[in-house]
Amino acid sequence: MADGLEVKRRPRPAVEYGPTGEQVAKNVRRLRRRRRLTTNDLAGRLRAAGRPVVASGIAKIERLERQVNVDDFAALAVALGVSPGALLLPLEDSSAESVEVTGAGFVSAASAWAWVSNKGPLPAVGAADSLEYALSSLPPSAREVFLHPAARAAQVACEEVVRALAQPDNASRARLALERALVEVDLLARERQRAGSA
Image (cartoon, rainbow, N blue to C red; front, side):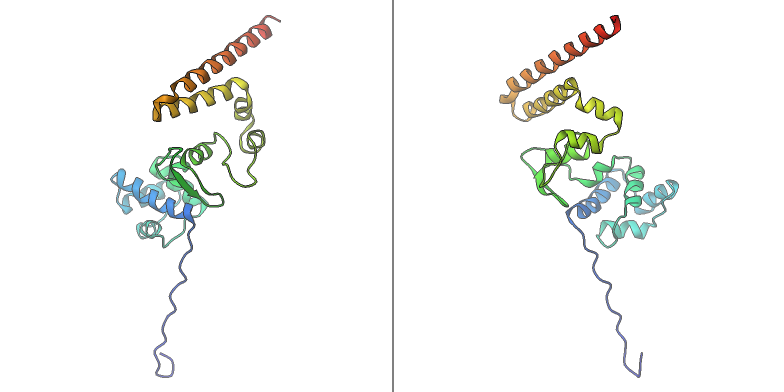
């Protein structure tokens, strides 16, 4: 009280969340419950991982009342036993579904999962092409694999098989992509054989 008047506390400003922050909060709750962990259990795992967050802090994360910084994010992924990507995106992975990614807007769920799985760039305004992506996003050994024609053909074949699983009429495209991948693998084998005999 000041001069007989009650001083009201100002409410704390609301934490602003983008779509990815909201999804992280949902995924922390979903994964914690899936593993049948209480907030205390998860707090214990975080403490053991060297990044203590109290149970009430976890509850606040799930209720969008506490933002997750990068170190908390990494520790949550470790404590929940998932990749960081599993915290970033919803479970949808269909090309027909779209998800909102902070900075990119709405993109196909399949593209978003390929991006967080480090399989390729996210299609967005000013996004890097595959070569630039590989040079900037991958360590040298993974970059070499990513850029090799056999690996690229295998990746395309895998994507076509996934499409064929969703839409069986795409089976012929998957078969063709697999044949192309086999040709690239045969070329690679011949190349290595020539290098070994030289």
